[in-house]
Length: 85
Image (cartoon, rainbow, N blue to C red; front, side, top):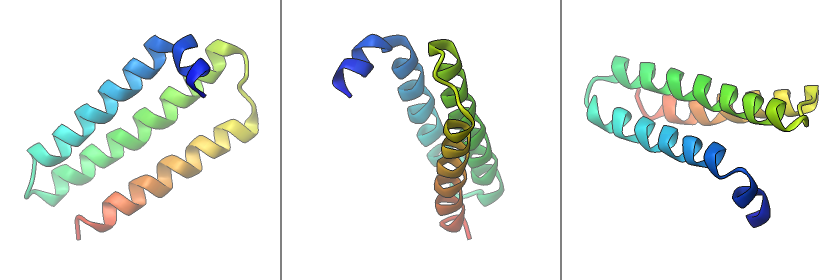
């Protein structure tokens, strides 16, 4: 795993920046649950697209990987969505 991170430094940097930006956005619009839900939606889309893009660039994109990123993004987004109710 450590070797993969070093190999794809820019991709993981973009992921970290996106996650930090999403956290800041989520907390920044508090206590407005509708804007928090919009931030969650953007985060889900960002994470899914990031995963697909990175695997496509490295030539390892498969249907199973796409499904995995989609399930993880929707699950995490769902968990975050619950706290906005």
